[in-house]
Amino acid sequence: MKYWKQLDNEALKERVFRALDGNVNYYKQNVLGVPASHLDDKVFNIDAGFLKDAPFMSTLVHNPNHIGVHTTGASESFFRGTQELERELIELVGVDILHGEPNSLDGYVASGGTEANIQAIWIYRNEFHRNDNVPYQNMVILTGSDAHYSMAKAANVLGVEMASVEVDSDSRTFRKDQVLEVVNRLKSEGKTHFIGVANMMTTMFGSVDNPNDFGEAFEEAGVTYRIHIDGAYGGFYYPFSNENFNMNFANPYVSSVTLDAHKMVQAPYGTGIFVCRKGLIENANTKEASYVEGTDYTLIGSRSGANAIAIWMILMTYGPYGWREKVLILQNRANWMCEQLKSKNIAFYRDPFSNIITIRAHHMSPEIAREFGLVPDNHQTPNWYKIVIMDHVTIEKLIPLLEKL
Image (cartoon, rainbow, N blue to C red; front, side):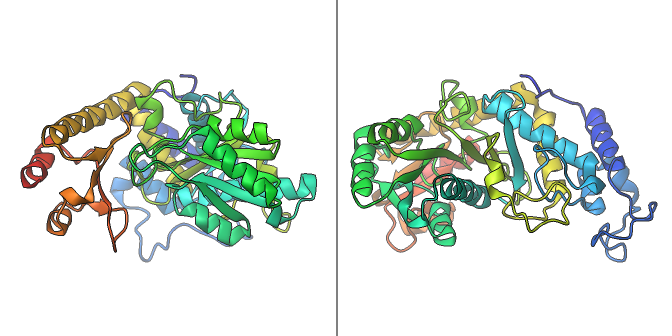
């Protein structure tokens, strides 16, 4: 690991408070032109004694704005201290988790996976339009049929058509020849530029697509393309459960990746991450944001610096080996549950490197599903119910479900 080191509590506090000292202090400095301040001190006690031992809560109170992208050069200098920790976080994720080369990536902490996925489609739509002068109607977002609904949102918001490759009902996978068949059909309908989206653990099944199926099919069809990895669920899990994964920047087909820290990392909601190769994020530059130092390449604009600090603190608390151990524990629980389901002849799907187990609905009464908070693939006519093995989902909590089944 190049950047990811475990830090003790004192080292964490020292780094975060030093970063806050590098930001503007509205009460001690004569800053007149920024439409912001610390949290309202009539409601939030900014001098509370416990804050000196609570770096995340202190960051919330200081309320840094991380507008813009801090991996591209200049950023809003009022918040340079905590922005540096976000820049460090993006480099850690891109290099130590996603196998990119140092200083070869851009990215930022988004509001979640949906925004990060839309950010990717926005970048490639603009790139295709600017470089090749191609109209939006000649572009298409291509996914597997288990893709997250954020792809449909992206298509709707950005005016780009969406198409999908049907996955097998049992294996939840598709083949390259199926992708090529769909690409050639769309090509015959006038589509020339493709944005392939491969899933690193789908939200419902934990299933995993092979980005090479997209890349090789696009190459054979002779179309212009980019490939984005939706790792909103699996980005902080799959790289540690499967060391041979290819959904990373060591794979030349991959241009960008989404991760969500508010799932497996257990960070506060509003902590998605978008990472892409250098030279791409400029396609989302909003030139009209001229008053923003360094301009703004993000979809969201102003965003809380505290969210970036939360992710950085969690990852640094565990360190890479502690994180692998956490994933291993969840994997072992999922393995145990699958063995129990097999012994009861209960039909289920699980990717062997995933902590999501999805059970066929005919084994599950609606009463059992409600009692154990199981999530269906469709609330009207469910075909599957999923179990997600999180930290709180211990074997002791799984046994009562098995007894009911």
